[in-house]
Length: 217
Image (tube, rainbow, N blue to C red):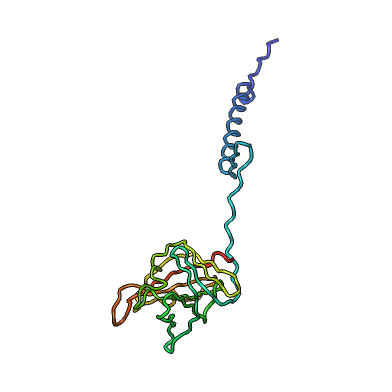
């Protein structure tokens, strides 16, 4: 009898192919794991004691608006201001009144608007100077962003505002809507005179400090 020839194994069943396939699959699996770890949630580093560091604190929520209560004084620590407050109304021409010139250290608060800490835009005004010298808001234009303005109330509480920006507006083109327009949160505008001075017409501009409520105490 003629001996049968031994058939060769298909290439895909050889031992060499199986070893190569195993090696390729291993490389693919390792690559996938590394990529998944790189695009997944980051792993927080541990400290020397093996513990994970404490996560960053959540941002502080804004304070709740306060109920109505008459202001008694205003304090701006960065300018060395701590002055009593009087209520102001509107003139016959619907313009905001100003504190009396014979008391240059007095601040006026518009009583027709929000009191300290109430929701909306509260208005405080004061003189820059008078015929007798500098007044309460002589340095108002120099207050910096981030500085505090504290308004004490008749009920013993204090509304703390943080300065957002300071603007100087020409009186002839004063932006009433931007300065006095409504706001959903408690805000404050502090005004005084600015610009150039003319003996007949007075100052040409107004300094306006924009601030918002950041704390109550």
